[in-house]
Image (cartoon, rainbow, N blue to C red; front, side):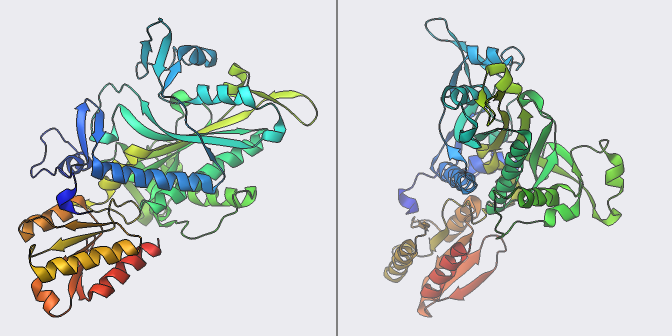
Length: 445
């Protein structure tokens, strides 16, 4: 994409109402525009990152055998009355009536609707296990929407639901989700710590939330520093092997990590003193096992091998897709702007032409652009008639991981400058070497 043809409404000054880094940089980088309190339009740059994150979530869900579908955003109140949650959920639920006076709601979550789908189409244990998921917009009427997409009212969320015959199978589904979530966050360049948590209005006894460490996090976290060194990396894990999956989950949850210091304080005291850490965390996902809470209330049963009929065991599992974008910025930025991890960057590399209109630099930039596209990459070519300082400032603000700078002086020696946004380090290389280096970086992801 040529920047002269792109819609990138960057701001030079920090918006006065933006309190945290991600909100400031998303507005300044032209990624979002507020339409109402906690409700945003996603402009082209922000939308590209959102789709990158969404794609990673899809890939990791399907990698472990989960099946995508799409449910409507509007739900009937009758379904929620069946489960007993309609009156219990609270004022975060946006309740409305259609023109016939039927009570409806804008879905904050989908346990009732997915249970209704299941009971209509699944009757036998032979159809289990089954995990269905979607990535869909949701609405929760936050009393104080703030911090941009971190605490908005409308948000994009992945919500998945498992159906299993017995508790052991349902716990395996729970563990399988934990592994898939850990890998999802790693691919986004994040370290997300799984912590036992409260289930809130979802319900159930077993739940973990995933927190990304960041100075602006809403939760105080007490943890063993060794937990941040754990990585799945390229480990191949057979997700159908219950013992292997359970072992991985134990590995990531045995080291102490809690959202308050009073709960299991003795366990935190047992952590070696040089490994005790206190920080802030941003919640980016949560998994739940709640057994038969919804299936019993709504009659979602299956016939067992012995011919009896039992309610299915269930769990639900969510990732805040739009919230993740803000969390990534909170964990990856400096005083110049965003620093995107390679896995989620909107463009793979920026090309800066230091002398727009000069035949040799224009030709070299066009050749670079074509070579990068041929490698399957998306470059952003700043071909504007702007001074160099303004071009560098824009590239730093929008945070592309790599920049190739093309100027007459370097070209006289057959060189361009390749710069890492994260480290700031630059080196002069040939045009061909710059293309190969960038292509290899992304090939290794």
